Image (cartoon, rainbow, N blue to C red; front, side, top):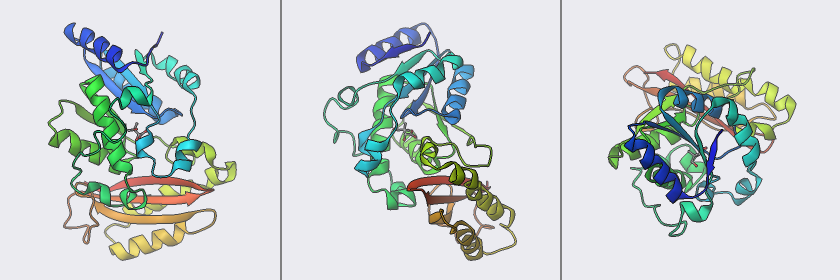
Length: 283
Ligand code: PAF
């Protein structure tokens, strides 16, 4: 049985009770519309901790596009059913009033050292301020030993890692590999909104990233990105950006050979849906 808790105070009390018994706490934050990627994170947390908590909260402050927020799938019962086989302990499904008792502006001032200005940050202004705000608030409530996030949201976990370190939060971030659909498309709640045909063809995004990685020593960065963008610019796909960045600073790299950590990141539109993916080119 999974216990469903809506109150922040009740959740914190349950966590403190379990901590006093010496139990470790694993935490998977989600916005629901769960897929195999989330389930994999939940299972990993279950294996590595005594108590696993999955939060389901569609955070309004991270949506720069109100239409995207309205369209977001909400199906708490369906999500709980999907989690049942994982045998996690608690689903935390708070209301916005529980998460933001002092209003949605409170807690948005976390310093992200400019990491929120590149890539996704450029096209989704304010998005990462909202993500950092909600993750900080959830960490305050859940107080987990380990926090589980997927590699698909590369910029997101890099920013959360920065926040955890700079604010001295006593939680270890565990990043798990991207789970992919049969044709290579990175799993995302948004994939449901693609047509069947687009979904089958969308493996081109990951294939393009793999080609970049394969050719990293043979071609210049300009050639790698130019060729990649050409490959991706075939309807219904429309690339928004394709860039090779320093994995720590998120700034564009100018030379792969002299960089320690290089990640190729991409955002592509298809059927009115924005898809992101990445590959570690060098680490
Ligand atoms: O990745 C997500 O689903 C969200 O950005 C997160 C981390 C749950 C915060 O709302």
